[in-house]
Image 1 (tube, rainbow, N blue to C red):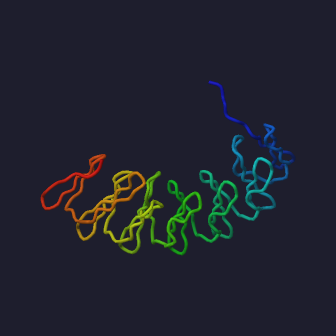
Image 2: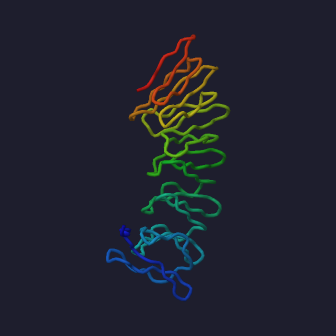
Length: 231
């Protein structure tokens, strides 16, 4: 099968300086003025380069997307994590600032970034929408692309999501993620269920002695009787 990958530019080096040669008429060649290049792909529109001991980001026309004022820049999917004086910030693929350089650490969780500051954690979407302005003690998990974060505040757990009514305060003693849809929640030795399905969030209060995940269905036990929930 023929390689149909579109090549935009190629990295070149002259006299120890880095530049880029256009591979198509839709981009421009970039002169060899940069000291180093930390990230570059010939089919990608941007490159992380160093100039005068500071890192920045340029596009395939040689235009500056992120100013050359950072100690380090890394790419996470289509966003750029920047570091300056030991603190971190975040930019989108077009160079728009999503989070100021004030956080102690930034980590990627599926569709979201988690920003850490002074021992608290904040959830941010990759579009720059702050999911919650409230800082939590810990983001326990949100593997892959699940609809909600399991978060912790003190000894209690809660859920944070950008779904409408998807945030549930830290009130539970335990949360177990069963699937991309179901979360089992325990409070005062009783179990409840949070269902993220088809754009809607359903919270079934903690009233069950036991809950079993059966795939698309969930079995609920109350006073020795079992029922089914789900579709």
